[in-house]
Image 1: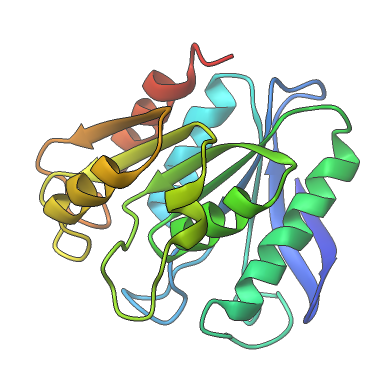
Image 2 (image 1 turned 90 degrees about the vertical axis):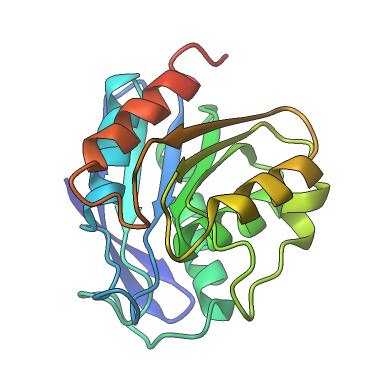
Length: 208
């Protein structure tokens, strides 16, 4: 279902799917809109990740950050995008009162989701796909301090966010935490995007 909601820079467009009474309501953020061909809510790994979460009974909101698609505003280097993510959390909290809220994202979107979700008391679970741990301009103070359950999916052959960085930061993160590594997958999980959804099913299918 196509949705529109208000963000700090104007209207934000999104896609909402899932049952009327979901086990969790997930806010799912897309990759960097100016890199790698331009991330959007339609990026394949985001789409397949959302499908995996839908299969385990979640409602999932994918949305375009400011300046992407029909969302108003302009790219803001991750600062304003945190406000966009919070607006998406507000939207899901209002639509599904009393339902657990999970924050998810891919690459740049995982930075926004993890850092914003760690600091938002409404968010109970954090999900990061190929987090850009060591990319210039990215820092992770909230994520590193968070004691919320954290679930990660990483490509073994990621050329942008190296698996060595994933392991180094994973070791620093507080429990509880889990990680699935997809054999041979690059940063965009090319030709392997369905495995992203399968990994999220594996990680969260039995989570309570």
